[in-house]
Image 1 (cartoon, helix red, strand yellow):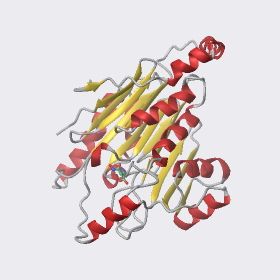
Image 2 (cartoon, helix red, strand yellow):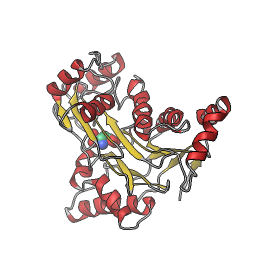
Image 3 (cartoon, rainbow, N blue to C red):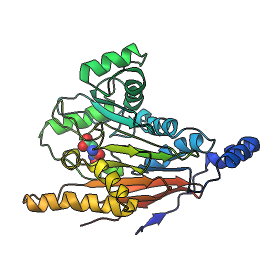
Image 4 (cartoon, helix red, strand yellow):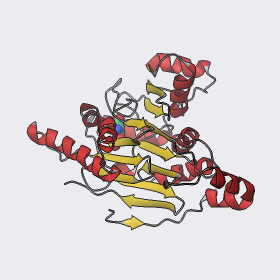
Length: 328
Ligand code: SD4
């Protein structure tokens, strides 16, 4: 399935947790006969490795997939050196860092924020929207006000590095979405916990130098992320406009429902997007789309349009980074 496989043996805190608390390990194993391969966590791009490691702390000790998802992606949101997510994310063309995120749990609970400014953990605000409001999506100023009410701290998300780069960009102001930016982009993370429940999350600063107010696929349930606890989960990265056009993650989950493996489903969704380009006579040259998927049995898959999309998966066999197979 993989053309390149880099085995990065990161210390699995799960194994460590097992050593430190053998009782807990024994108890969860006894409660959960583990008929499927679980727990499992899969996430997009190189930074998925560290997000998985964080998520594994929760999963390996019998915690909930939802908590694993939130903690895993938060680690990336917090890191100013990750320039496409959370704090330190590249701004829009007017210099504002606007963040998009969504989360979905095993009960079809959904929460989302779009064009959120000044809060470094949009995934946690999305979770608060899901758990504490009668709504599923808050945007812009309203999302910010809600976050502040909930006790999230207001901060400047535009780091000096991002500011300098943006000022440089302003000299030409040409909007040229770059595919596979430094192998870091949106983080989408899917988890299957020891109880067999699925959850997912997706968080991004979106396309660098986008129009102010532009929202991509990442906070849109069905496009950037979809979870159906009876079937599987999927998440997307790449050009959000194209993923929204095909309701990409929902498509992947529906294809799995029809019997396709996660790998086949991701491939078919990418082919659908590619076909759209061809029939509309549009060039795919500068477009990247990547999907990852995880089904109820703990099987995973990944596929992308162009070479360069990496993803990480953590099972009881360790945390591995792989290159997704590509269509063109
Ligand atoms: C967006 N899908 O805002 C995100 C960005 C991304 O690779 O993943 N780019 O469209």
